[in-house]
Length: 273
Image 1 (cartoon, rainbow, N blue to C red):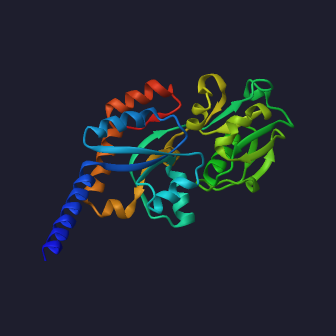
Image 2 (image 1 turned 60 degrees about the horizontal axis):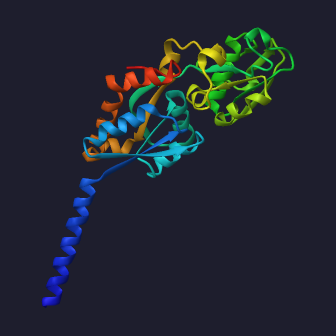
């Protein structure tokens, strides 16, 4: 009987200590694409003051972060604009929502300066690499149309595909590929359309290397606003995790983080708050 009593006491003590450990170390994992995220380093320090450990999980592609978030392998992600996010939900049935709007990153055509230094330098036979994921591919095609290189026949708001090209004003070769690879192969093509965060990580500068920039106004501005995403069930359940989401969102959309972004990214990422 004495041994049984001691076992019960030991079990209760172990459970109590385990519970205390969870309360003292509140770790949440956030999925990020790439490796340079100055604003998130600042946010990590800010939320640490409230006992929250923000753990970064880095990805090199756009497909995995939403799947892992939906499967519960991470608690948040921050890498996508609303258009991409909504397409992911429609395509895969993910049950996700967003807790904050973050920035806009206008799309740019970046030049291989060996062959192209301006939009006027793009000639028949030149090769342009562009993102292969559905939303950024369609966005890149509209950018090429705005630049006067192609003509599309596609409804407003619809995702453009290469089947929607009705005329090549300049007979360029279009090469779709994973967005993260385009900066690496830029020396092998004449120009590349790259999302600004990826271009910035690769050392490309909007003011020096871009030859054409996307105009983001009206409905397009909302569609292309980046977000912080979470599982809908986690947010709706309330409790401590929902409180942590609120703390992270509030830290992100602070004056301090806004200034960090303005100083660090030199216009590549434009805060929306």
